[in-house]
Image 1 (cartoon, rainbow, N blue to C red):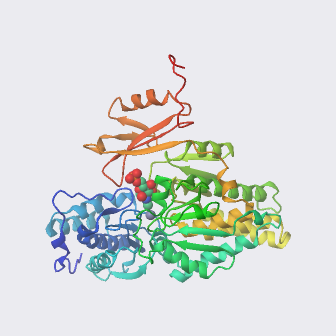
Image 2 (image 1 turned 135 degrees about the horizontal axis):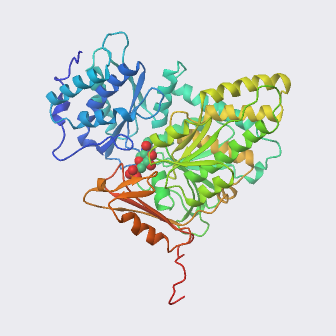
Image 3 (image 1 turned 180 degrees about the horizontal axis):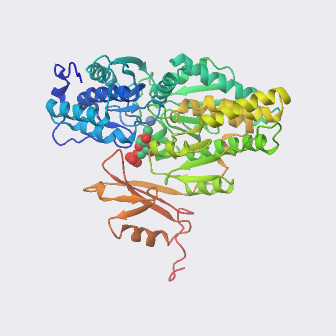
Length: 543
Ligand code: 16G
Ligand code: ZN
């Protein structure tokens, strides 16, 4: 086992500040950027070990997503492009919190033995590094690079400033032996988008749709990349605001997280945008929400959140499947399993709507890794968090079947509705990021489907009426004291808390409430919804 240059690096000098305990949490390490040098170095080591273990290319993304610009963070992309295997999370916590170089080295040696990580030189560890637009990203990337190269022979490729989903996409593509540069990413998105646009039925009432889409880029990387996409597209009119070029600050009063939580217009939007379709990306462009500005001059918006994006996707996919499966021609017929995955934060009205469509709806705990793993169990699994992170997964098995079906249909009924449905599903599988939720590919899919349906943002928003909901966070002494079960819908401890919640929600029509410890902040989160803002049942005494 050779760790070449572990000691000479100065990154240990920036070792952990007393009292700071880092945890890989829901989506990697996040903290004030000034204390992350050492963590980056260590995650570089971890990424190289993971690459040796899996004999695959691994990704390391430097971002703190929607958090403030002075924060930063790191997360690792596994060979399939998804999140780091949970099996390695305890090791990454130990590595990040090792108090001195000796302990760090011992931890590594022990782990290498335990995991049987091969150091036989048969495979060169390769890491793709990406970062968002945060100013701290550059020096943190340097620290990560040094970490990678402290493992003998390991190679780090700096892929530059990217959205988080782009880096995940590249890792996945590399490991599948496919073309994996940024221009390949754009090319795949654009060609599959064009394919969907070409397949729009003639009778779609496109004229009811406002041509223009205005996007809030959160003053981050997503806006920049959307500008590139925009130049390559003639069929969409996209205006990008908050690109960061006009001096706006990343995530400050802008971005998908702000819009979804505050339900007000982001900076740079106002009543002059009333009636126009608007969208908002988060700081690293893995979340997307839509909104329209209320026509009265307030700063209120009608939010079209992740649940509604999920519903739009589900309606479209279901329609294509029923065309394809309703009138199967040829021999090779198959009924796809279709599943929808949400978390407890999904608005109750969306879950009811999806169930009414006859879909199988499953809840998982918060965090992409849980939703993604569950969605992967279906031929087509659609997952979304209300906050706008989500995607559609297609199983390899189903994709091979679809390819074969398409070839068969092109010989027996070329250009038929059946074949168009197969082609649309194939195009969706290429447009929508198969590695992780991706605001840019999600946005293109929403735009294509709205045109296919002939739906304005208002028509889309009317699929169902959200139940009024509230979210708040509560500072507590020890948030780990709150333990939940059943996809975070039930509190197991402290004793008595769930009974108290039950007693409270019983007073309201469609009352629902849950409490969970945050995975990203030192708080406990509380969510509640009910049929109306004031739906307390009539009081026995005062009516
Ligand atoms: C992270 C998660 C997101 C989740 C959020 C919850 C990933 C890539 N991101 O941003 O899915 O909704 O954390 O935060 O997994 P919380 O635990 O603080 O509520
Ligand atoms: Zn994000």
